[in-house]
Length: 137
Image (cartoon, rainbow, N blue to C red; front, side, top):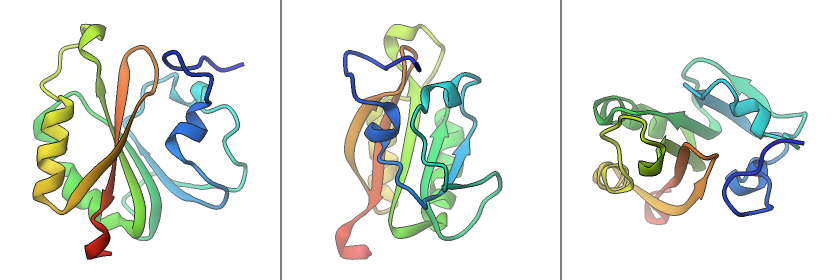
């Protein structure tokens, strides 16, 4: 059985909202990430390169400059009701980073994205769910 993040018994697949048939891109996930995705639907389609029409992007970063460079492109890749999850190291993990929830949120709002959920991926990584503003879809 895969490790559950935090105190929740909810699977990471369910927390992230990964659904059957989704077109997905994972960007720079930690090595053990796929071990955490117990129950991943078999019929998802995973893309390794930038691809328009994605339902879901999960991006892992430790650097605000990388986030600033990459987030606008992810917005262009997702369908209007798609999801971008941004993961960054939790403060308690002691992993060096200049990314925080506020850094992500401020950048997201500046390009027309809003945050709607936060979750623990594992003991090191948190994730913030971003979507395109409803009025802009």
